[in-house]
Amino acid sequence: MSILTETPIDLVPGPSSDRSEGQLLEVSMGPQHPSTHGVFRMDVTLDGEKVVKLKPVFGYLHRNHEKIAETESYLGCMPYTDRLDYICSITNNWAYALAVEKLAGIQVPERAEYLRIITGELTRLQNHAGLVGFLMQDMGASGTPLMYAFREREKVLDLFEALTGARMMCNYMRFGGCRVDVPANWLQQAQKVIDGFPQFLDEFENLLTSNEILMARTQGVGVVTREQAINAGISGPMARASGVNYDLRKVDKYGIYDRFSFRVPLGEHGDVYDRYMLRALEMRESIEILKQAMRDLPAGPIMDPNTKIRGFRPKAGEAYGRIEGPKGELGFYLISDGTASPYRYRVRPPSLINLTLLEDMCLGQNVADIVIILGSVDIVLGEVDR
Amino acid sequence: MNLEEIKSEIEANVPGCRLEIIPNGSPSGQHSLLIDADHAFAVSSYLRDATNRQFDYCSNVTGIDWPIKEISTKVKTKKIVDGMEKDVDEVVKTQTGGYLEAVYHLFSVEQRQGPLVLRMRTEDRTERVHLPSLTPLWRSAEYQEREIFDLFGIVFDGHPDLRRLLMWEGFEDHPMRRDYVDPDDYEYEPTAHDEVLKRAQAHQAAEGGL
Image (cartoon, rainbow over all chains, first blue to last red; front, side, top):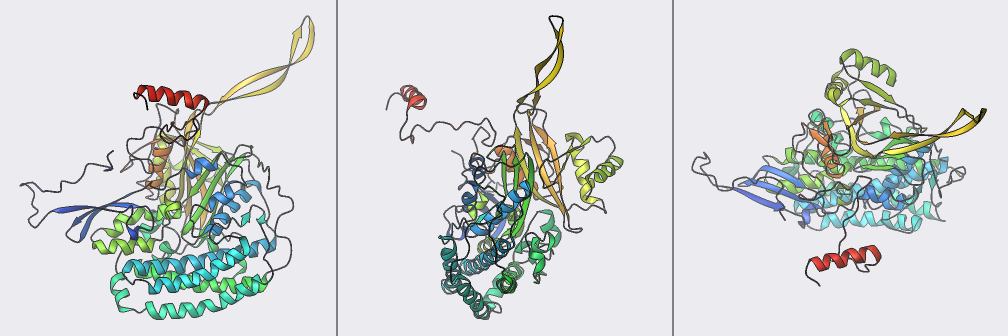
């Protein structure tokens, strides 16, 4: 079986070639490479240390998620969305629930909206903390930053476990609300985690933000301009690091995000450092949102009483619902033909589309920079390959 | 955002294009615009570049398979049977589908508008499955069009690098088609029975026995 996807570059230049110093080297990075964050492979062609060509190879984790979901009921798809981006299962649930709610015109009770925001922003916190930790690991800062980040992430995952019964496969939301209400004492525990988080961020940023090695490795590396980012459909923190002022929490104001005051950090340079910095700043804004949501959380039902989630058959039609996931714009496009399972179920994966510019970012960089550029994109292969 | 307005605006600016508004029955109200393949590129570049529209962000690109489907509807007609006029139920059969569809969800970052849903249809599902690629306009379509080519089998003319994305090279079918059948995996079939057992036995006999 040929794994080369196109005619390989002639590795030994012939006598007519004007290359005087040395040969090109073709390297297959991945799929088991520790820096590829999963089973992802890149065919890299190197001229010495410099990258002259890079082609990503997808599909190692492909299980045709969309086809399987089209044989499931609308409710049955919900736990399956957890498996897309397994770091942020709750925001996956949210995006799918939002699409179904648009498809069938369902209203969500107030308390459920607040719970969605609380769990969703906690998801963003643990995703960004983990990502920054992994980025440092990729950069060669073995252990310490990653373990600091994972210590905090684990506190959030403990909250998820107390609320939903699972650390990562939360299956928390339903179209029309949430699955369970918070258990006793959960809010106090969550408040403690949220109040403790800025201290961790201070400590973390103290260690990293003005770290000379980090700045030397990341500034000016993997630059994406604003125009490039919009044209290539880059979304989420990666787009905002390039100065694209497009945060769906502000643009679409889905759920009840219009009630919260928070700022959208924007980068200037669009390099790896800006992407790191943007995540650090976004975590602080998430904490602001969380504080407001915890303060205003009303009492009331958590499920829309008119929605029958079992045997759910929406009218024929279609809807595209999208949210600002921690990795970017996560969208679900659903077509109903009036039966109990979706006729078409499409996931708009931010991880895959954010990789569109991977080659452009890596060209001319050193081979060691590929690792941190890929790390700064923030991908999860469960979502890339679906 | 008024779809009727956009339609007449495009018709005024792209001569000869054939547009049709496809209504959407769901409460989401996201109606879509069906554009003909010949003018799709011109229409899309108008939408991207017109200063009052600026659909600069192509978010989601996907395919849909619509196999031929027969819909029978009962129509009451009056017929003269044995000299008497009677109400007779007559079944009228109509065919829908029989094409592949590519759907683009466009947004405007500058003007914070969207989604504008564009649809293109192929002529059939087997031979004439070519559509123009919109990747030269929006690079975000690059991997997504490759995915549609891979899983649905729409060929995008003008795509810079049209290869399979998720399935491996050499794979032949298109798994997201509605009529796709999984190939039998005889080596890993743990409890072959009935039809599968028969096929497995025939396969093993052809291979020269276990």
